[in-house]
Image (spheres, rainbow, N blue to C red):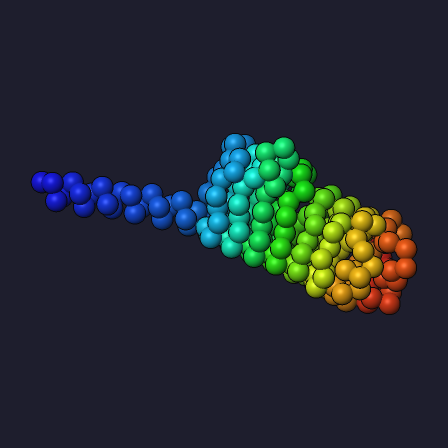
Length: 193
């Protein structure tokens, strides 16, 4: 009997761990998850809309097509980190705070209006309309990204010149630091709405 109970408890614990570590499509909306550790978790399609994620750790996680819309991503509760996180197609619209992205994959992610400091990230085809980008640290890939209305004034010329911009879209409302030439960098002017 003890052996059976021990096996059942072991099975339940393993199942709970598997659900915590591999939470594809899990619903976390409006939850207070301050300082929660999601590192190395699989969170593809998870819903973090409106959640409080200040100080949360998403390092080395997979959160493809996850929604962080309206989430708090780093305030007084601490910096939310996404180091080496796969955020392909994730939605960050209307989120607050200034999350830390280092070597993250943000291809085709929606970061419209978000303040961020990407470091060595891939943002190919990302929607960065109206985003505020500062502290860009070398080697970010913005190939094909939409930067219409974005503010890049806080970035250094060195970091902008070391990043990839081929086919990235900008418009007359996109602001760059003095001395940066978007056309020379391979960007495309597009004032369409």
